[in-house]
Image (cartoon, rainbow, N blue to C red; front, top):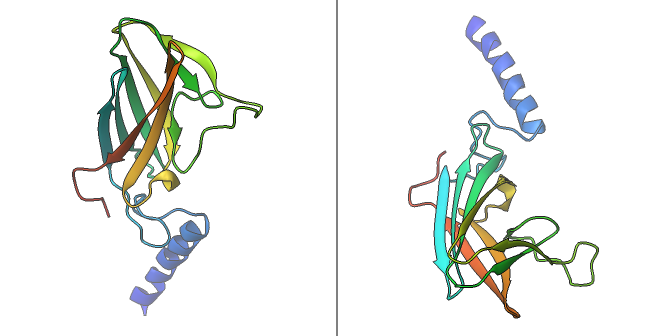
Length: 158
């Protein structure tokens, strides 16, 4: 009888945490969906090289995303900010040009230089074990977008 009564507080705690949207492991949602501990990707075109690495934070509710953008040209390249952020992460889409926070030339990267930015990304933006981010830029009137599909090289943590 004592063994059954000692499990009741544990069940109540698990139920309370589930109602608050948390879980005991911090890596699974209420449906048992697992999230990779870390993801990375690298893409480039003639103008930029973009490298991204996302690490699941200890509490398991968000990722710390670090993005390094390298200008490969001999001119300054402007990074277009989406409402203040230099990266857009799926499923978000870039703002319309006529919106209140339309894309602006908010940061120039000097020729052959790099910049690294960090972001806190809610884990809900990870779809099927991947995170898609986009960096929009303009170089001498030519606009472009580099899209990274960050994924894990290891199996997800359960």
